[in-house]
Length: 82
Image (cartoon, rainbow, N blue to C red; front, side, top):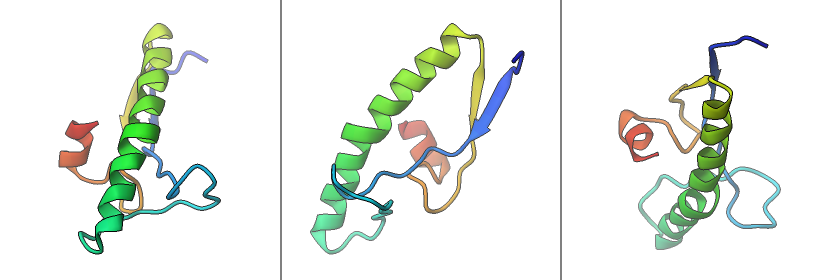
């Protein structure tokens, strides 16, 4: 396609493997929200973006992530975390 940069959102997983809808657990309480957020990052977001990032690198494409509420990467801090 000869596209140098693809802009997108990070995505948001659900609260488990069988989830049908996204879940954005950013409240610190109850504690289950933190457990869901940790699972989303470790089991879904990071593995997905490692694979997508390698694919983009292999095809000389840069990825631009828009920081937006409702997605796991929504602040400069979460962007650097990814």
